[in-house]
Amino acid sequence: MYKSMETTMSARTNEGLAEDGELFRTHIGGSAVIEGVMMRGKLNWAVAVRQDNGQIYTEAHDLPDPAGRPGWWSWPLVRGCVSFVQSMQLSLKAMNIAAEHAYPDEDGADDAAANAKDDKDDGMHLDVLIASAVGAAVGVGVFLALPVFLSNLIMGELTPENSVAWNLVEALARIALLVGYIWLCGRFPEMARVFGYHGAEHQTIHCYEHGDALTPQNAARYSRLHVRCGTAFLVMTVTIAIIVHSLVPVAQLADAWGIQGIARNLFIFASRLVMLPLVAGASYEVTVKWAGAHPDNPLVKIVLWPGMQMQRITTNVADQGMLECAIAALELVRDREIEAGLDTANSPADASGTGCSCQ
Image (cartoon, rainbow, N blue to C red):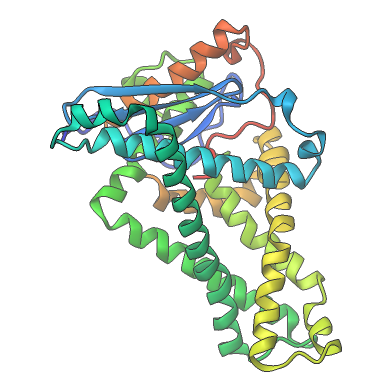
């Protein structure tokens, strides 16, 4: 495995915000993958992966033409759900490519690759489908069902009288589970490196937005935290959920329909599933549309502060090799847009852009 040299360059800005002084806000964002980084622009997405031999493997794919999307996909609230699903699908595809090239099969790899080339896309689609299903099931169980169970255990049944307190306990349980899960993941060396590549993605985006040449030395000067990171979106969903769950009269409906006992808990869990698109859509409007368009607003920094703090455990300071991968991916996306006359370095970016696609 390639052992990249730990950067000795200045890390003085690797903590805190780094939006001050940026020349523009790019719509380009991305996510970390196994031993690499995926970047996404308006026209294409690209993956750069550090291979076992130390070389960087790159692969780029065009994105579907937005003109072919249904108009209602752009509606407020709906666009957040669409963006989240698409980002997750893209991240899983990128992870599949990264796993294939970061950890090659040494036994007959060349022959196998040649024989399976025609079936590669079908296999990737199947892997993505399976990974999506498993990930969704685990996420629903741990971050939706378990908080409901814990809240019922601590507070008793949800009633109209204890609704606000019950929802707060549920939210605290969800936050504790989320933080604990991410912290535990970071204890594994492989995931610690993924978090390093997450930091590399942020540092490279910062470098690009500040107009500096894309070099590991320049990128290393910038923060591993980014105000438009998808981590802030995840944290915001917990906050929005408290408001939505408190406003929707779930307890009153359960009482009106005579739902008690285990059936009541299942009803509450089902209500969380039904309201999830609304929560996700509202979170997108806050973290991406509003906060992304007003990063210097003091209120934005207050609202996104919890998400920024969460990034301290979802990112690590990148080493030189990680920054090289992030730069390689960003350059593929940037160059494609320059060719099409969409050079974001010379014009303000679309305010809907994010510094990270729902990591």
